[in-house]
Length: 315
Image 1 (tube, rainbow, N blue to C red):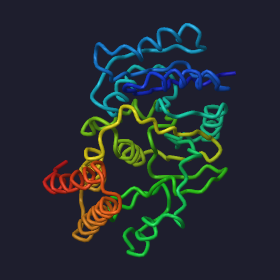
Image 2: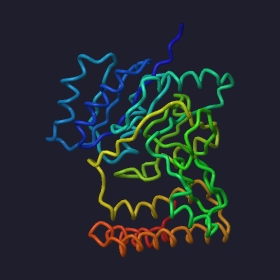
Image 3: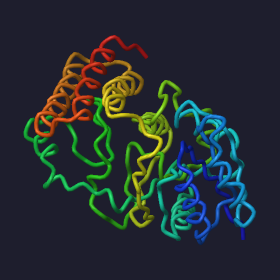
């Protein structure tokens, strides 16, 4: 019986302990991957991650390709795509921990797709569910009628906003979505053979580069969320940018996503987009006044700078 091969692509930066644990986690899969393509963004001279791989790889039930390349997660994943040999390509971050049947359930779902319409399937992160009924932010979003859809995993084409996929309660179905994260997803190789890659406008720590890539794939392929393919996100602190840079990216990257996915926009769409950015700035300001600190005020400054930069941005 033919067993579909999976190449796991993982970008990493200064997380040797997380990588050691991920290697063990992947080894416990009931359907083992063919290989792990590890793209390490750590500068030359910092060898902890490479040493972890060299020490661990000989005992693993799959091959490991170690590649040194920086520039950010979008660039690193593209390098991994080009190096991957499997029939399927899985994007698994170094701080994701999969349940043992994760890949088996994913491949089972792909096998049911006899017409080959499904390009990618994302798993369900069990420790990230956000209940909108207990989230003040999402309650205010609804009161203000900020979006035209509130369905988790959908893209609001009127505002350019990706509706948080983690608003979706636990389920055991295959649910269609417009976009997927790049930390726990499995893709057909054919999607990338058609030339699709992560847009290298997105540099450094990733914000929305996965949504933009999958929304482009969604123009041709169907995307699904697998409610029974479980994993957890550990949210490792290492390798992340400071709060100010991340806040700036929430404006700049959102603007770039909107420009590229909806190249022709009406005045109403433009108004709705900038209204969302203004509301988010108020949220940053509120947090800074409630809990003043270097980080919260860095977020405010970053958001302001991002909005200014976004106003002049052209795709």
